[in-house]
Image (cartoon, rainbow, N blue to C red; front, side, top):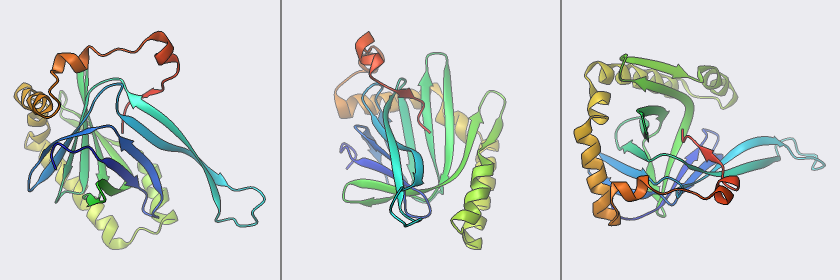
Length: 219
């Protein structure tokens, strides 16, 4: 399983598939977690950008969805845990390491696709200051009502946020971004792909390719 490539599907609580990631690489699997590598200029992200009522159908529940396709400029390692209600994106920029944590269900593996529910509540971790920045909390509050999050679900989300603060105090995120950990991750990438870190970092797009490619930071 660890060397297989499969799709990652993110769903809203109402069952809507709003994000699909492909052409990434599973570099590690254990009884506790999975780690994916998202190669720069290779990984494909298809994401819903708008959702509006369909015109002329007479059905307000019928909606037209618009999607964009894009890729990442920098290497990304994506961590999922089998017993934690969050996943973490570690983006390696030339002068910094960015940690982005999303509150979500543990993933299910069905038909070679990872599927999880995203609850629109994210945190940015700043290891240098030891701070956590809570993001898009207004969207979470809105969706609690719109999608009728149960009391048990909201309690689980609150419990997860407390868990994240505990992990921060225990230097979990510092260990995740340590030089030793990054060296270990790149070694796994090489073992699975046969390519070195330098080969991935040296990949560039031509001016024409850049003009036809949307670059984003994955979140």
